[in-house]
Image (cartoon, rainbow, N blue to C red; front, side, top):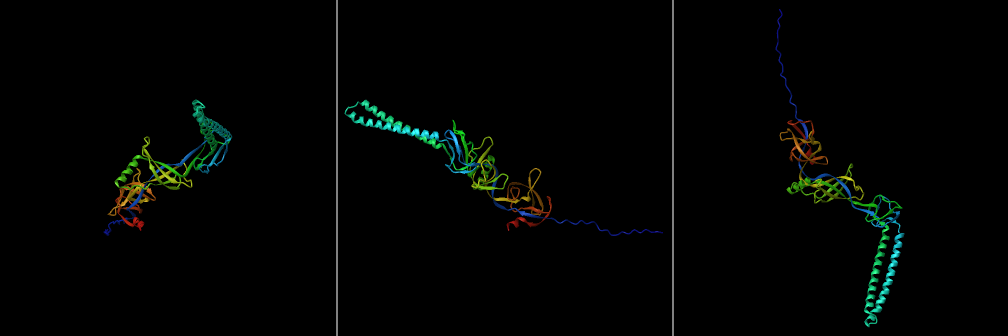
Length: 365
């Protein structure tokens, strides 16, 4: 007989090991002083612009400058044929001499008639006629001298000089061209660019918010510093804010700001587009976090992983301002002293973590 004996062996109950908390490094948010800036598009304008124009008519005999060069105020740029003006001046000077001679004769006659009239050797009518003739002769002298002055100016204007110092552009006429015929022909343009203006526009709503923040004490008024960056490059130039318009453009709803920049090396050229960082004020309680800590969702919202006091991860939505270096300015949603995850293992909301290093504390040391 076969007897089947069934034995009951001991079996261990299944046991699941608890996973250790994820290890993360954090940044401790702390307030700092920050100059708040806004990036605005701007266009460069010359500090002074002058059109060189022909003030007399004639044939251009010479061009005496190189296009694109720097010229000094008063430097000769063009020579218009001066022969007609020299002849006109000679004729005007001759007229002055003729009228002066006539005036001398009229005075001699008057001087002779005056004592004779007292003894009634000549009539009073003759004396009045002599007086009138002398006054007319003096007026003729004045008119002749004025004509001579006009002729002298015309001769001077035949030599066309730079009205301002600056960089001259291309010549708009060539030798042999007839200029100034019925109008002041444009010959070239000079722009002074050792300093330049940069004009930028700002929405009036932003300007009002800035004013309210300053009045409320959230910001201190900025010092008027502006920094221009040439589009497509990292070349920068620091300048100062001159003014903002006192009126708003009714079509665009924007106000114009103007900055002045030193430009001895001609980095900024008139007409060039630049990006201008305009100081909006200074915040003494600004919260900055490293760029790598900020996550952006599909809707464009900004989020941070924040470690709460129980070492649990929170998904915190925050408002961001501008980027300053490699840090984001946090406008709201994060308080000083809170810990923001900046590295370590992947985490999710509600997960307990172990903080291995405080990156914010390390940075301050």
